[in-house]
Amino acid sequence: MLSNASGSATDLRQVQRNMHLLLLALKLASKRHPFRLTLDQKFRHLLEKLYHQFDWFAAAHLAERKKIIHCKPGCSLCCYHYVDSVYAFEILNIYGHLKSRSDFEILIRECKSRYQTYIALVETHRNHSSASLEATEEYVLEQYAQLKLTCPFLQNHLCTIYEWRPFSCRAYFSLSAPHFCQPNMIYAASRKTFLIQASHRSEKIGEEIDLNMDGFGHNEGGLFAGIVKFANLADASL
Ligand code: SF4
Ligand code: SF4
Image (cartoon, rainbow, N blue to C red; front, side, top):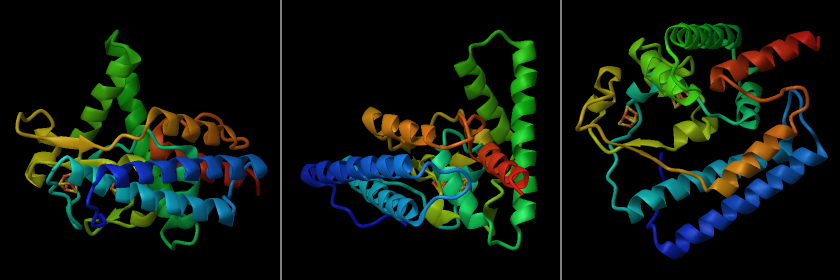
């Protein structure tokens, strides 16, 4: 749930500064303890604070721009999308929380299945098109949504990893009625979405933190691929 934020310019600048400092602290923490399959408690605590600041920033940003959003609990048509552009450290944080869940194995299987579907779409499109990588990604993400495969973490229309959901989920809002979030409405002229974008500087620090992930390498394939990758690394380390 978004906090009650007024959105004054001073508040926005202050929270941007807070986020920047938290990212630098995360970078330092990741350098001191390069992570492999777990995040240390300090890192998790800092990330929690960063998510909190980001949610506040999103609310203040929407208020400042006088944007009225239609997003509310139980509204989940946006969770048909493939969850792309997620930092590896965010995925490791989610993976850490999943491990204690009784449906852990099912979730891993579902993440694998979603990733395989996504990759099959990428390969089919590459074989039949000379489009650029960027255009292919955009096309494939649209095609994936049409399949109406819900995110494995969605249960009873609610996100079961809400507190740890990645920035890419936190940043996405609809300015039009939820009806327009259905996959078949992607091209509707009346559909209006709003994405809160972090500064280029913040994104860069996020990428630098990912580089401190020992043995993980560059994360391609978004949230579902990353979860499967961590599960495989955990199996291999037994
Ligand atoms: S983006 Fe659309 S489907 Fe998702 S919560 Fe907002 S209004 Fe609902
Ligand atoms: S992680 Fe949560 S918010 Fe994001 S797509 Fe999955 S269920 Fe929806």
